[in-house]
Image 1 (cartoon, rainbow, N blue to C red):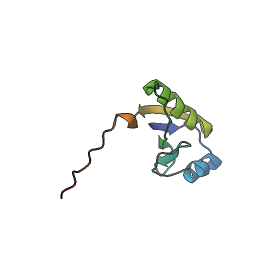
Image 2 (cartoon, rainbow, N blue to C red):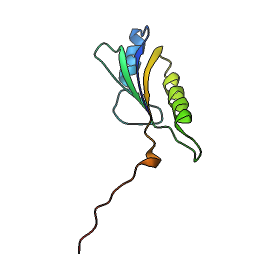
Image 3 (cartoon, one colour):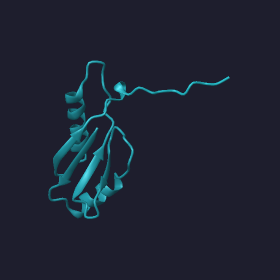
Image 4 (cartoon, rainbow, N blue to C red):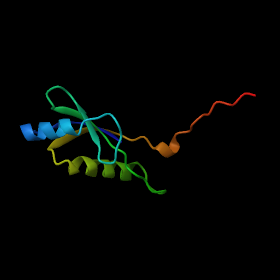
Length: 95
């Protein structure tokens, strides 16, 4: 899941916490990338899915992970990539 948004009233301690949780990977706890002023952000997280889970369940899980960080925010865009739908093409092995 990728969530793009903006922070609402982030204080200095919040800016420091967001910077500490920075990164580009997808983890269950989530990582932030942000602009120089730490006002706009991209939050990336991995949401484990059950066999019957869909985009709605993934979105709720991602929003819960973002909310767990405790920073006031506004969500502007959500994007879901279901890894179960990705097909890996392997190159054939020659003799």
